[in-house]
Image (cartoon, rainbow, N blue to C red):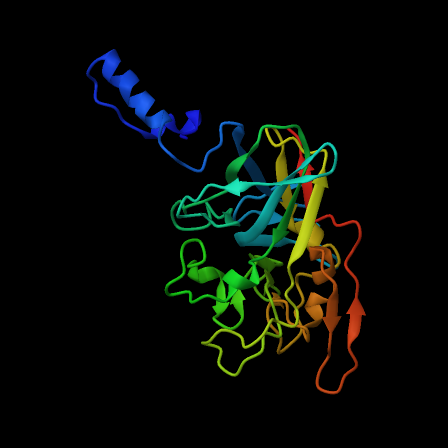
Length: 308
């Protein structure tokens, strides 16, 4: 059955009221995925840096530790999946995502906050849209990342949004679950440092980077987030990268390592960041070094509920 909110998608000939009524009757009899007891919802997302609205290119002060503590963001994208609304009794209801062919595929969605990050306006997506049974919901849960079954499919033939080249590492490594590109101490000719946060699976076995892994990745790095007191009709899910960088010096990067943190288990810049992405982190300084375990920060502060 066609959901009433979708009737605007169809264009009817301007003939008679009878003709339009007949067309609507035919539409009502068509099969589809919608159920008469469902309602459409849009989960709105927003980016912040230490509580301030994300604006591409803006310089934020007081980010992390150390001086000068200024940070500028020029890319912000992330995948989520398994979105569910939580009823008052604590049970979860999976959000049946709209299959729009652009931002959503199966149970996966790409959030893209870069609208003003290019020389011109970029395509952007700050909402996840789908259907749930009409009921009272007071919370939301979702996972940040790409499910293993979708993470390592061929980027050249993958459906959108899995074909976003800027979110791909390689076939074996899969996608970047979070991509936030930034610069610490921007404007400082001698001290500016590229400092990014790229989250993805690591230790994915295989000899060829251009082939899928031969087994599950050692560190999937998929985190689940649940938020209470969430009104899907009014509230936003806020992602604050200032919280992820709270213990980092964004103007310093260890020599001969990736810029910022790209999820590498031998990258010291990941030690304060990965636990703030709601993940346990294993750091290994190098061959023969004993693994160091860092537990995720509880409670997590990366995502919160934004009230109107």
